[in-house]
Length: 178
Image (cartoon, rainbow, N blue to C red; front, side, top):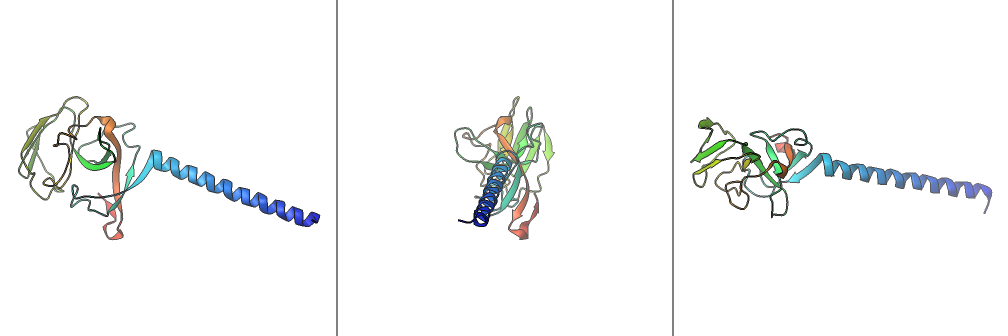
């Protein structure tokens, strides 16, 4: 093999190694972003109708609750102790709140709480007083949502919050904030 051919072979090999290294770095960065910063979630189910519907893909930020607590009205990603997967719900009750749901009306600490995102009545009346580090999350579709009113989900600690939904990214016809 000539010296010239050997140099070309080495040059191709170095170029191939640069490509492989660049690809590995890109994959590592993408995995870190997905694990710690951002996630895309496909909505499955009717519990957040009409705000989010089955098939919507949403962008969620995972760092929101590293330095602050969930706020009333946030649409959040939660993990539920004893259940697999991540769920999307809305924060309604904060630590120390008294939450009363009667028909299509919600009262927080005895004051009416306007919820323009709720389009139907709750399946039953509900009352709860939240303790320290307890949050109540509900679906916007109050009639057909499996949420904090159910005993297997219940009131959640702050550690159950995994991120905050920021916007719908697909389908493009529904693109935008939530």
